[in-house]
Image (tube, rainbow, N blue to C red; front, side, top):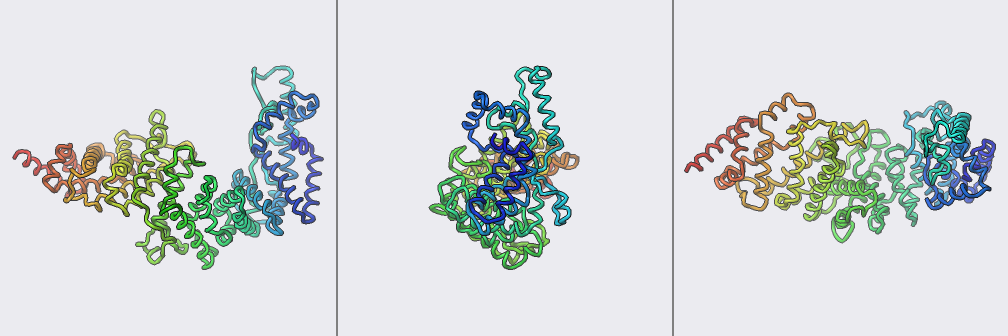
Length: 619
């Protein structure tokens, strides 16, 4: 309310602007910090970010209602004083030239406290940024003005005062308001959200995107802030590095040299989950970012610094703990709600594990298609960014358990069989499992948990096709307008990863003629194969392949049908396995293959096995 009293009147707001000019006239660290506090407070109030604890806010509200001396302040609040103060602060205080000067002075001559909170201001502005086409035209920037905020059409001060007056009159007469109703006049006497406007302003950042010098300055600030022995500074440094790296091109060029990978790795070893989270965020970004093809990104110095930084954080992540991936295993074994931003944290951990096992290649940006591997033309001579030790086989079961748990959570969250069955966390858990399985194929093939995790994804496809589930029923409301795109990406990624788990473990573990169904996991495997084949190879599915919707055809094309059919026929080539399979219902699967198999060879081989089985049963 002190803020509202100071800024709701235009003369007072102009006086603050004049004092800002005089403050920036001469360097003084105390004055710089004072200006920084004012800008942080103005930004927080305008964007309705709580700046006081709920207890303090409640005490203020009670005082306003109880003290007679507060009558003038109450009237000011009821006249939409807080909203008017926000508008005046945006007009006279929150200006791009003030913030540009603050960024410059915080770095040179420099002040650690100011650097830290400048990064908070930039992150907050990015959170509420109005997305517009970037421009380097000075005239366009001048037409846009220096104001950082852009309010809606209902932000005119005269209109605000008129609405407040009408509402006060309605409240006094009791006309036009339902019993117990609240409006923006009453909001001023509510708790911490006093006077919040219904529509928050949008922030303008074209002035920053069009100024490479300020972007480079922010990169230097991130590097120096990371070195401070201050938890808040380290958190803001990593969060800023992760966000600004893909937002500001010039920042990207400078920050790879300004940040030290050893400091990021050291944050993994600190027993503070928030520091661990932001360090994981930076590591996930550096291990996944694909550089754009432009002149600045193909210079030798930039590529060397970028890949050196990525190498340090990836290798450091895998080596944290008492052994390879020990810290990862401990994080995954923590009970629910033990990690901050738990879903995002576990998602990034799983993804980074996959990147440690199959590191990206240190390639020069080019126009080649994504997805090329070391065997492809693009990456034939490119070394991996990092070299990490192989993860222990015990990590397979833990990842598989997390996959099954996420699968169960998704099913429970459905309402009337509507809701997402694929999530980003599920994608990355399956990705990590898929890249580790080739290192321990026999362990994976004999693990019921790993088999169950892979089978769950493949059976899900067949159930969707059999029940004619359409994409809208699986949309995630959080994805908004991109729900269909994200559904296709997640579904394809999950199915491909599950298929890779199967093809990398079963053939390598001798799931062939030498494999006995009586071995550990053999019956589970045969039961899954027969059920899968019976669902896929039938008259309805054959028709769906031709006349089905794009979604149904995609699901069928991504499935492991051909691979499983070949494995089953290969296993049944021995008499003992063929007999055992007949007891598990495999005869119907062979009949389906013999009638609806994809190739003449498969149909012929299935028919021969059926004939052989009939002879064996007759004898």
